[in-house]
Length: 79
Image (tube, rainbow, N blue to C red; front, side, top):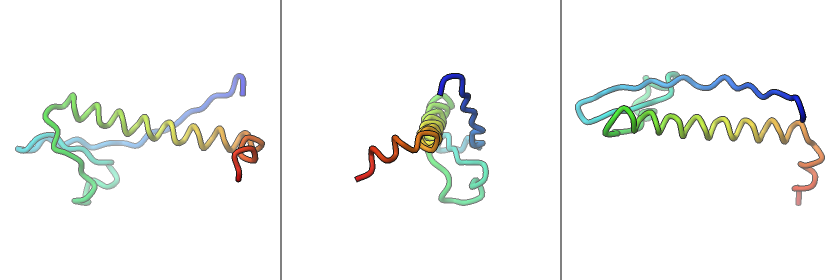
């Protein structure tokens, strides 16, 4: 894996300030009432939550890609 590059296009987010606080949703699901998360007290809080979601997405995608590149490691973990 030396010299390999892993590039990820990450999801877009929509942030909305409401009277009750800050909310966010993935842009593709912003029209769904269930897609929104919040309220958060500040834009910094909502930005941190989006950063956590992005980190999860990057980690999951990286693990999936690494496991697909190393089929022998998949066999070792199989029951």
